[in-house]
Image (cartoon, rainbow, N blue to C red; front, side, top):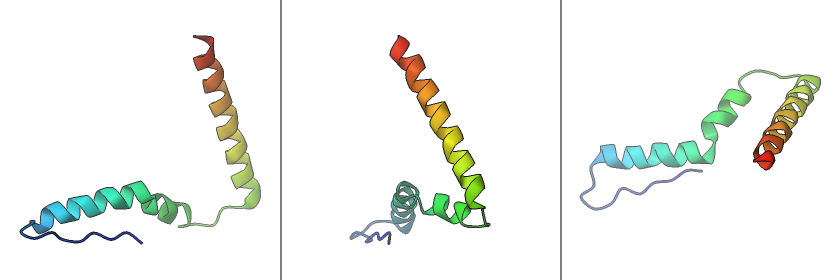
Length: 65
């Protein structure tokens, strides 16, 4: 649960901006998009494997330098 308290004399726009930043950092939008449609378990495993391969390749490239 993301919560922001409006400070004394603080404009509402500034508090809303702080709320949006906390909301993004918490990853709420990412979760909503992820759960907006059903994904088969086999597809999610395939995507996870693909991400792992990319991550390892990137780490290998970085380690070379």
